Amino acid sequence: MAHLMTVQLLLLVMWMAECAQSRATRARTELLNVCMDAKHHKEKPGPEDNLHDQCSPWKTNSCCSTNTSQEAHKDISYLYRFNWNHCGTMTSECKRHFIQDTCLYECSPNLGPWIQQVDQSWRKERILDVPLCKEDCQQWWEDCQSSFTCKSNWHKGWNWSSGHNECPVGASCHPFTFYFPTSAALCEEIWSHSYKLSNYSRGSGRCIQMWFDPAQGNPNEEVARFYAEAMSGAGLHGTWPLLCSLSLVLLWVIS
Image 1 (cartoon, rainbow, N blue to C red):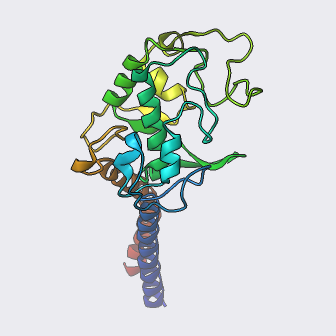
Image 2 (image 1 turned 180 degrees about the horizontal axis):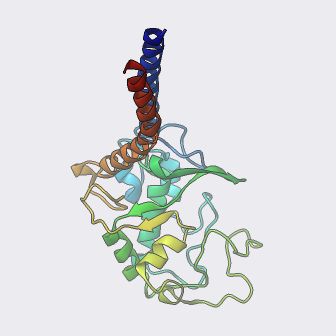
Image 3 (image 1 turned 180 degrees about the vertical axis):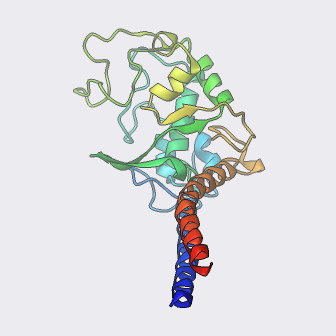
């Protein structure tokens, strides 16, 4: 009888270990090379040879179409009807960062580890706390200091009565530094914590680069793999206490 229980427990431990490993592998795979379920994203990433201008680094593997990449460069496009010039003309130095931000959001297939489900009319998924490389965030903030805005959270609270966003009643236009006193405030608050300022630098393999040279490959692929493995590994580690307990029971039965 004891021998039968030993065999059964051993098989149970082996089965649980295999299942845990399988779940971890599947979870890691599902976080890589994926597109968000959002307003303009493709269902699956793939080549887009004619991506426009600043979106072109993603042309070998993209979640955005050529048309989306073209619209991303317009002041008030059909994508979201968002007006960058809501407090006067935004400087070209500042605007290029918002175009690049849009390209990253719409085109990147490497944001899987930070995709979260949401209950919103215009999308079913969003990104949350993407670790943005500190240089990209700092340069964004520095280049926008001479531009003006009237809000710190650009996701909500606008007046859309004209068909595009306008400052709400009572909101005053000030330089970016009034609403975003630090680079972290800009990157983290402007899109409801879609980004998080990383302590890591570009090329570290630990933070997402908004800007990169496609001739050198896409560095964000390595970053996504690192965080996907970390997240799936955390789930795997959670099963070890139970497996250890079963192993102790098995040893007790054998003895």
